[in-house]
Image (cartoon, rainbow, N blue to C red; front, side, top):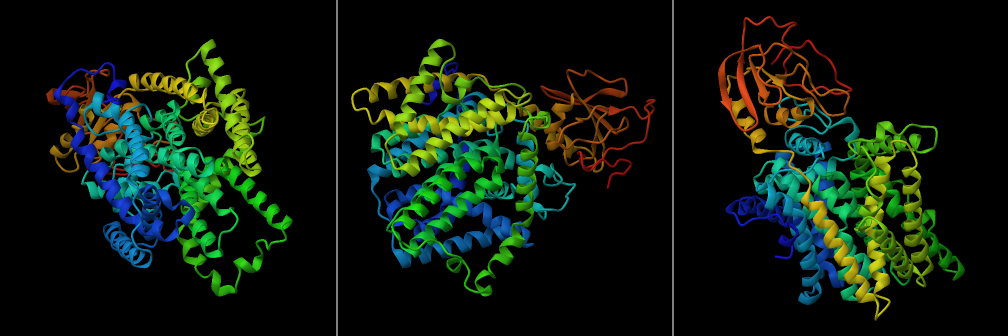
Length: 625
């Protein structure tokens, strides 16, 4: 009920319930699949120092494992229809082995129920625009990457990762996404288990990843900062519902949300890894679990990897200095290398992840080349066309009151890191200072919108989390300050939820049935603005398509140029072309389908095709097949 309070314009109507069944199917499939994959992994690898919240790690670790395992099987040439059952059977076997070896985890209902409740609250609020306004499971917001995110997951169900399949809505993995296979394999898995299309799964899944990120933020507050239980819950809520974190889920930035999700778990495991008194076996298990989360973060969003890497490096250097000062042994080459046979496992792993790792290198190299002054950032502006207000990243109001509250947040964040272990102070405190400083640097750069937005979308929630921890250190004033931050967050999120739009109306979804009702091989010309063709082409992929005005000069796949076709699909803004004949064959709220006049004087050959073009593949002149 609290979540519904955010949607102030809601009216009692039966439509509100329409999206619930599909949403629950997605959530159930995700928890089932990720839970199976994560239970045994966490039971065997999670260190005992973190075991009091063991069950909170299961689904997050399982999500990472599903994506990585399906990627390995995919590049090994195992068909997806085989690899998913293999994954499930293997996960069940690992779960049984873990229970036999270590027994069942302890269950403390109170400790687990409250963070689970807050995570569900985060999920419920993130789902409001889809459930309460759109009324069906589909992407919302303005993030046009959504059609590629859904299409890539669909593509990976049917094709080899680096191949081309012209009979899928997205024919191949986009050239700039070569590192991101695991997260789209995970989406494909949830889609298969739920029985829903990848475009239906996308929005509920990304909202769930935001909720899982809030669980990671809770663990960061309670395990790394040793915050009291209630303060950790408050920090979890404030950071998980940060306005721009919510923005990335709503619009939706699928890969960025996966990177945000993996970040807090990575930091928690990195901190645990350097704690004194751990055995080599425990450290090895912790490092293995850390590698899984960091791999997902690195592959899903390479440019975010330095964010957790900064505190991890500081933690490691601090632990190294401590051990040297105490006269203890430090890491030596012999600890890693025990003959060439000890490295054989790296060969198949390197082969499986060669393409994703190259994708990471290319992405990072491209970013480094434009970061220094004198290089244009225009090519990196993406779909971000202006600077978001600074206060949005900290869920604060605008104007003078927002500036005063920003000073308060900064003071609380300083209190949160001050007087703690030097590694923690310099690791996370230094990260916040560096992140804000870099964001302000990009604020001064022409076309710096993208880096400014992406950087602060990660740093802002961390600032709020540490500020909440800092407020918890002031027993009398702290609760009042937390209430103020909670009110600001409530107001900011309400503003974010109120205006977001819907990018996939039912009128476009209905086009799939229209296309399939036409004769096999029938060609269709799209008479509509280029941006509108993105989703239209997605749902009409069963027939060869073309357009007089395709979407050019972007990285998105587009249809070929052609005046000639068998049919013309026109949206109402373009009106009816003189090339049509007869009354419309089909009509809905957004489109009309006509026959093209075979006697119309239109120039050029017919170039309609199943293939989608991009900056790399631009050949024309082929015939439909």
